[in-house]
Image (cartoon, rainbow, N blue to C red; front, side):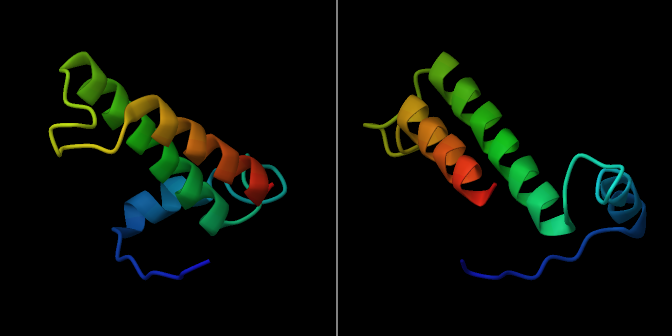
Length: 78
């Protein structure tokens, strides 16, 4: 899995950390960031679908198939 580096404000990192660890929803920051990215991309796909901007016009790769692929990747991460 490729690694990336992202700079985020301390306040946002603090909010993220509230959801990470033994008492949180995520095991580590990477899991939290991946889940957040997937959720955001799914929302963007839904918006594109409502505006008929899915595959074929060059703006997205194909809505439901992309979202399903993300969910499968998320399941594989667990």
